[in-house]
Image (cartoon, rainbow, N blue to C red; front, side, top):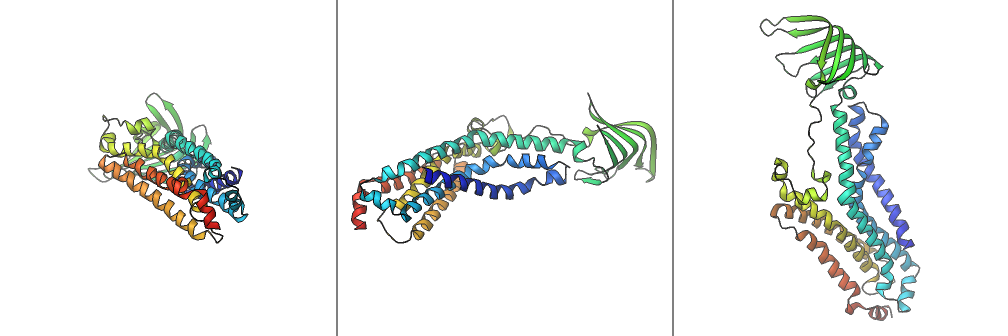
Length: 362
């Protein structure tokens, strides 16, 4: 167990770190476009780790078992155990205990941890994008917004106070407006978040003459809800739903009605995921302690096993897609179960008892 557990943890850490760094780059926009700090970026990036673990754990388990058994082979410990009459089941039992723990961890990540963290991620990003002060108002910068706004603030004084404010609203090309003010205060009211402008003017292009009308004011209130979409009701995607929400779609919602079969297929795919961990473990075990004993390199066996594991995972994704299209969900369990039964029989079946291995070694 120690020979397997240590490389399993190391493979998990290294692989997750590498994949996490590539995926976390997608969150750089939080810093660039919305003026958030490094800690917010790191916090949001950490929320994607559970979704990575759900895929990485079974592959890391396969690699760890291969590593542990190969070390035992290199030291001839497997050959000594077989010669002493130790069965394959006895050799593989500690590794199967680790496999059970890895399967339980994969199941927990799929049914609870992953949707929980993805919801936190989506809610936090939506709140940041809906926060006008954080996403638009930056000191000394002209910030263009995709919905047709340009905002400039000369200086920020903290606590929602700004000096030298300019807002160019060109969402409606026929009725463009420019707000200018010496000072502004951001405040929260019953009518929503309001930006109170002090000592400024509004420049509007008159539609009938094409001239610029200038309206001067001492105090003017701008409702920021008119400039942003707001967070609204968040649409939960498949990765953000718990198991019950996947297996029982809410048919009163258009999204659930349109993707009901795919949602159910996603739920069954999460339940079937731990079976792949067991299938990978059995393939790794058969690779190094199954078949005839050999003193030569196991490179070809390991390469073939890795290709088989990869093909099995790809077939699993294809099976999930087929289940979502046809509504036949049991096929998602059939694939890994078939692999488990076939490899398990080859590994522990009566035709391949340890005695036959000893004859091969002789």
